[in-house]
Image (cartoon, rainbow, N blue to C red; front, side, top):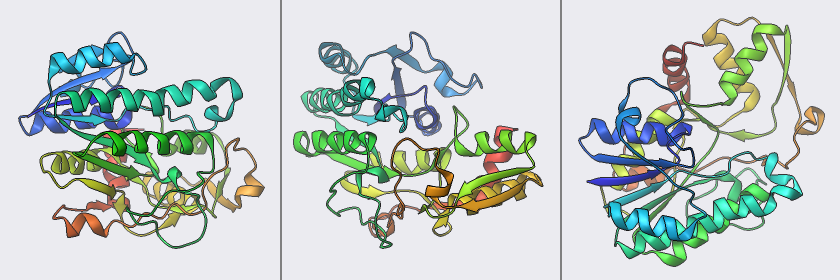
Length: 304
């Protein structure tokens, strides 16, 4: 199977290409950088075919995907700077990348009769309440510009294609790029105390585990909406930080605060990022391991 993967310079795209290679699939990677820029770890993503592509350039997207003629497209590329998206001067750019760019990918995918997987987010929901969000729940009133742009991307895919997977994820961490664990461990090394919010609830997602699941899914025709995070229960960012500090051996004191007390976020954040994942098992897919186990493996691999 030939799979076209966007956003391979990011955390998830990097691991998806490596997972495809492990299974003997042909992964073709793309990103906006002239050459692959990411972890130079000698893995498949650094040796796979790489094509520079601006997904907001409709004609280029059509040309590249027509030439590659993939069996499937896994669309990981996105604007993911949630706070940066709130700046008025960035609104159009965020929309162009997450909505228009996704529409371009969807149209080109349909033209070659390939299946498409779109990586979405818990931010498409309004973040209220305590009930876990079901994959087939309707999305209304995202809290911020980023969430609305990702919802617009979902709609572009679902209105264009029949053969699509929309997979919502949350609290992502991986070896390639920045993430909460890396940031907080670096802060913890130089501070005696850190403040972490304890009223935003969800579950982390390790990109290596997620990549395995995404390839499992794209090898099938079990299309539709899915939620995918690691198992291990719903937690707060405070709980998450306490666990990886303990595993890492940091003695830094972690102080729980409310989102309001924290006060540093520009964009509104969802209090409820609980994603219901039982649809994975119902459709025959193996769930991700526990987030605690994922943290343990990540800390060994990342060598922070």
